[in-house]
Length: 618
Image (cartoon, rainbow, N blue to C red; front, side, top):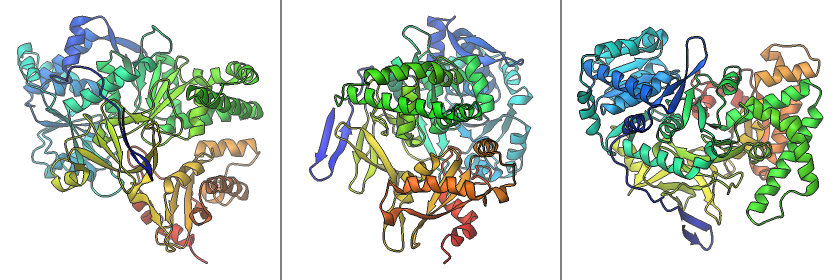
């Protein structure tokens, strides 16, 4: 490990040496053909049939499907270096198209399935896309409204209208060697994908990521974190992929699963009613998710306990889990003896009564998970660890091909996003900005040299995020440069920590802190509808309209408690003085969230300008 310290400000830079391995060669699709040759009967994927049952897909079957689809794409005019868009939810066919396109050296341009026509137009136009794959008729109609402005777009295939079989048939006459000639021309420097960052402001920028970027990232994660893929030693690793494949995190999971021989299935819906039954049926050994998923599981368990009249026991179980995991963490770092005998006994009791049910809701076999996308509350991470599900939190961007840091196996430090992954250096600039360097860093933005020059400095990626390194090289995210609020009194406020603490309340869905050029800090809060309905039922209150609900004095008191708790984190000048509860949540459909569920601050403040003004009226 290499460290660089500043006497006044502590650790400024930390390097994790790369793992010893041969440099990557070829392209991402080579693994599909290699695995099928080495072990054709290995179960590579799980796929739902028309009846909703999971069936196995062997390595040989997947290779044959990739090869057949690659032939069809060639037969329909897709060539090496062409850019092809995919607009779909997470499903088996997305992975099939990814690998077929990578086999022939084409570049994939993901479009979020919720993208508007104008968003689609910009990405298709900027990337000079020549063909597109959409999931269903609505997507096809979205693109049809702008197709007259896209002269380069020549082909449009629809998954739900038999696109895969159509392409199989189209390429049936081609020789396998035609495909392999294309595949053998792919190198680590070949562009694999152009992923448009959703961006909280302005037009999305196309991040150019190579086959080498993904190979470096995936192989590093697989080699370093492979032990956490299993529920117990010797079992087969399996994961259910429910993250959007249009997002770099979901894409990295896909590539790592294929390269690491991890059986994986696809789940297109993030809501609990669809996800939980598939977790139970597929029974993954680990999952990769965003904090939102773990929050949902936790709150669902709490509501279930309240309905059964066991709220007190559940809260006691939470406290025991947190204290137990905290003691285990302290022992791992040489800061304590570990859980006491009494705490171990309590933990063992609650494992049968509470924790086993939480694990069962996640499929029953999960003992480890990885989390990224946004910060996870330390207490939530401790609870899951105490409940028998160790969550390894990490941090990364599209520009770093997903994870740049992560908590390593056996050395978790809750509340941080871990150390740099092997081969990556984290540097803290003079203004607190996080800079990254490593083989996973992108090569630049498509058609945007100015933005590329602003982001890359001699190979260093300036992330725009603020953070600090502790003495062991663990990174803590403290905010975002562009999101720092400055009140009219000159006080700088980082809103992230306040917002996250308010969101910890089970009734709160979202919170945005405002106060730039204002006399004090205030907040807009939205509600978790499912949690509110449960809260009303438990208190014998009738269901009410959203407009009436936000004026309910008992509900307001609950949210006020969340705000008061958040204010304990900061000085009085930085505290939230007042707040307003909104009747509707911020949604991606209304342009107020990015597809990765981050707040679009400027858009929200504009949409709710009247509500913000009301917060500052005397």
